[in-house]
Every structure is written in structure tokens, then in C-alpha cells.
Image 1: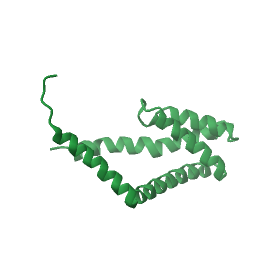
Image 2: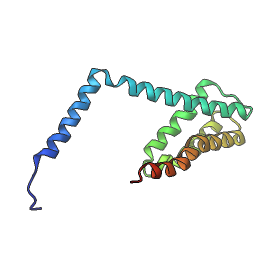
Image 3: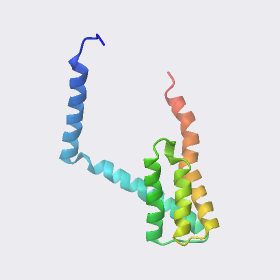
Image 4: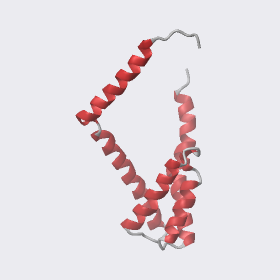
Length: 134
């Protein structure tokens, strides 16, 4: 409470914010957007390939709706890392509601989540600890 105020850290933070805004206004948003589009496209393609492997190829509209809404719900449920449980249950329920047989929806969604979330997470933790060692 009785600490003296040092304006240098505050000025540095504000300067970084304005530098980021300048970068974005000068077209610096294009490469991150391209990266996000590529990531999402390949992620949806992975899910589509799981549907093909299960013998039930779905249309583009069903794929997008069944993918986008659960991922969004997983982001909203920020208390659960990676939307654990929220994404799987909502994706399986949504695909079942969109006409995919329940057994196929559950197998495809769980296989997709293991492949796209759990395997990278399990592999990533030891790698992160290894890379951050001093």
C-alpha cells in the first residue's frame, strides 16, 4: 500500500499495446488469419477423414455445423482445459441430431478428439518440460 509508483513498466506496457495495434492496422493481421484458416481447415479435414473411415461420409454443411458449434462451446467453457467433455458430448449429440447414427457419431468424435487433442497433449507435456529445463 505504501509502495512508490514506478511509471516505467506501465509506459512499456502501453507502448507494446500501441505497437501491436499499429502492426495490426498495417496489415499484420493477415498472416495470423491465414494460419488460423489453415489450422481449422486441416482440423475439419481430419474429422471428415474419420467419418470416411467409419463408412459414413457427411456433407460439408453437416461437417461445419457439427464442428464449429462444439469448438465454440469448448472455448466458452474456459474452466475446462481444451473444453474436455464439453466438445465431445456436444459434438456427438449435434451429429446425432443432424442424422448421423449415434454409434458412428460417438466413435468418430472420440477418435477425432484422441487424435487431435489427447495425443498432442500427452506428447507435448514431456517435450515442454524438456525444452524449459535450465
